[in-house]
Length: 260
Ligand code: COA
Image (cartoon, rainbow, N blue to C red):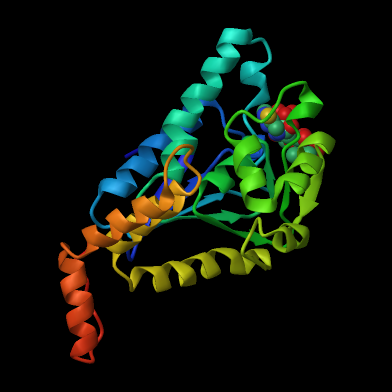
């Protein structure tokens, strides 16, 4: 597929999606959000992608936020619709994808950029990365999941401080907060994401999809995550991957999972 604002490249089971508006620090305008939806959906369903890496082009930014120029004149209804649509087609969509999504945060991840990284299943950062939710400095609040996912990841007090101050934290603070799992020099960021992706790919993609659903259930209001886990655990017993995984172990060989 041809995109105007992003690049999507596939190699050895990994689809790398790169937001490609470096002159606007990869800010998320409507067209970019739609293209991201299309690229994530295509990767999730192509039968060949085992892991998706999302990153930003250039050396300065992952994503510097939602495109402020697009919503500066919105009214109450339009503002609400913007957030609801974004949740549906990108942020919740990514969080609930059954293909693992790794965010490689290569610079500024602000506002919608940090929200996209937080919707991803986990995050790595380059040592120049800066993260924050500066929305209240614009007279608005995070609208793409930031008020929910930031406290889930770093705890309520830290999230309150970050959101109220509208400040940025550096990569090492993000590491100490548990917001990112690893910090490396920029040139090592994508190689590290690919190395972790290769480790993930050795395992059953069918079981990983069930695990993502069960982990996410912990954060779904009114859902008993333990019950979701029990059902997902049972589901695994009916899969070819389970037969292959257990047989390979008993035969003392590496599993060759048929996958999804
Ligand atoms: N929306 C729209 N355009 C944005 C943007 C955003 N969120 N973030 C950056 N840009 C644009 C700038 O307007 C500028 O465009 P121009 O060259 O046409 O004027 C270009 O990207 C480069 O940004 P600039 O501000 O010149 O870079 P900088 O290095 O001086 O500052 C930031 C970098 C990230 C600190 C600054 O761009 C910034 O504060 N961006 C907004 C962050 C934000 O509030 N995000 C939350 C949105 S809800």
